[in-house]
Image 1: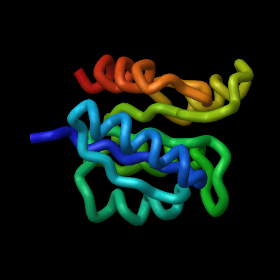
Image 2: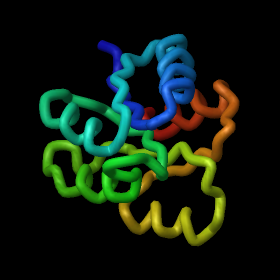
Image 3: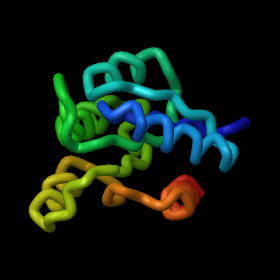
Length: 121
C-alpha cells in the first residue's frame, strides 16, 4: 500500500508540482490550501508524512506543525518544511516546532523524492 503524504501550500502550482513528483515516485498525495485546511483533512485521514509551506494565509506552517505534533496518533510523522525561507533563525523556529527537515524553494523534483525516501524509509 502506498504511503500517504499531505502537502499544504497556498500556491496551487507548488501543490501540483509536489503532487506530480511524489505520485510519479509511487506515493499517494493529499493536498491542502493552508494550515487550517490541512488540519481539517488530517482529522479524517491517515497520513504518513506532511510537507508544508511556512507562509500561508489562515494558518502558517509553524503553527500547523505545532498542532500536528499535539495529535497523539500522528505526533511522530515526518514533517518537511518546503519554503522560500532559508534563514537560520527560521530553520531554528521550524525545528523547535517539530519539523523533521527543510527544503528551500524552488526545489528539484529528484531532491524532494530523495528527502521523502530518506525520512519515510
